[in-house]
Image (cartoon, rainbow, N blue to C red):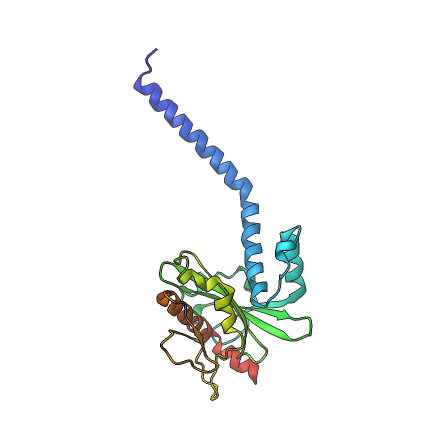
Length: 240
């Protein structure tokens, strides 16, 4: 029997409603798992910036392993403002650096995570956010107790070119930052330069950029400078 247009319309509308309802329910049911994955990924990156969570691949339960590592090594966290003053009512883990970097400097919430290593020394971890060639760059940089020397860095991206700009997420590029300094001998903030092969190195203050990934490399340099300059008053106050 031939179906009329009304039947087809009602059938199609019904299917759309059913599919939408199924997707809505699935989204609600999956949301806790999605949020847990996001939180675990964030904790993992914080830990990796200070060379922790080394046995993640061997862990039977990665969620539990990361939670235990985070609780063991990340012994403090807080948020400061542009003057270096601690903001008591803000949770560092909940701050979205992407959103903060869109605000005027004087309105930004600036997270700090503190790592206590097995030998008792401390590292101070700062979240990063910037822009590469095709999209956002992000990560964490950890400073030693002198608030000058880089202990480690973890970098990632959303859509940089594989084999070129995407190489910033590789350890070979990131390891170059270890031991670099963000202040010069006169205690002026200079950050770390990401230089091209033809450029002369700046002792203690430069790393080699990605071959063929000039714009992404420049994005990493600008990200470090643009984020860390917000913390200068805090760094200098803690160094006294």
